[in-house]
Length: 269
Ligand SMILES: [Zn+2]
Image (cartoon, rainbow, N blue to C red; front, side):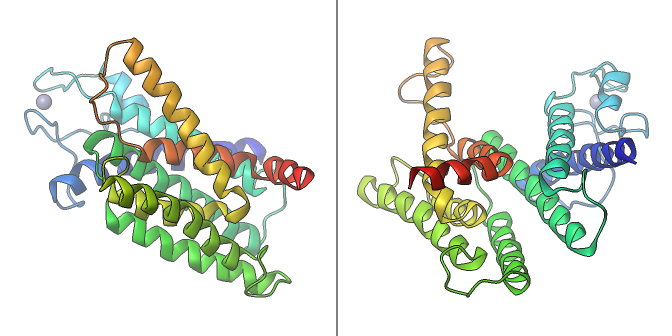
């Protein structure tokens, strides 16, 4: 059963990873999400072999079978990443260890949704330097519904600071409020408007206790990568680096280690 769960999550993640690539690239160009995938260069429709997530890329040696041009590494990397995130979400929601139940199914689906949504925003911002409002808004709606679902199944008052609804709203206000302040004083130079909106979503996901850590980890990751890029001379001081991917990487760190971090946090207070 355990092996089966791993295989199902991995396959599901790799397949949805394939859809993530389609969503980002076609969404950016305003194209329909329906229809078969084609080679970016010659328009040759991809065969079933090339459409196999992860493995297809290697089976055709990373090149189009019609025009021989190199296919982007983005495809297998995103597919593999979502497969691994889905496995992580399976462990983290308790899906791997606990017996199946309706609550477990809801919780696991919510975590899988977050992995998919956050990876899509990550790739979109990294590649096109745009954070699509539609994905952020859709995410906020789902996170709110899940928070209310939790509220109705746990003993907490709506405005209890530890309750998922109030904690989420306060978390969203902390992260986006901080970004809005930076945006306001720098007239959009320090941070983009997209990050302010993304901050609402991510702050709501992690809740108010961990919202500060979300910011801290994102700035640490950003500093490490910026120093590397400057030293490797891939960027100069005037280059623009999207901040969304760091915020999302930080959110994943917090989500996967949230129980340990919260325990640690309570020890500090
Ligand atoms: Zn081609």
